[in-house]
Image (cartoon, rainbow, N blue to C red; front, side):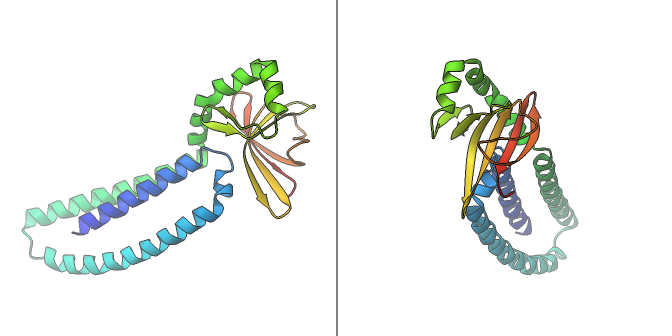
Length: 207
């Protein structure tokens, strides 16, 4: 019974971790979905506390019962429990490493990169996309909602936008960015290398 309870907790943890990794593939999605994420975290926290209380009660009762189990069954139960706890720790640790290194987004963009570069190689299509507001262009896994070719250098593809009060924040990818940022998306631009000449960008006026 205890092992089943731990298995349910492990599967729940793995689903949450997979969700976080998927969200991390898309620039700004965490911020733009902040309310929904906070609501999910709040509900999960309540469920976790309830399950923890139930688990403590179950653990106490089963520990007492395990004293009367045959030695080989008790040993097998403890070994299975250790495996579940080890898998739980590995899941949390691996998720933290992947989020820290931004590997999910790097891989996802690498798969979408040919679609972005095909647009850059086609001057007419690039001009059409960058002059269209909003753009709504699907490139690989990403939907580009706005595009801008900065006169100082850099082609910006915004894949997400988050508005708060009078401020708007943009997220996406930029090809060969200039050192001064974007005149269109905001005075404060933060860029993070992804692959080759491509960077992730976050832009706005109030970062």
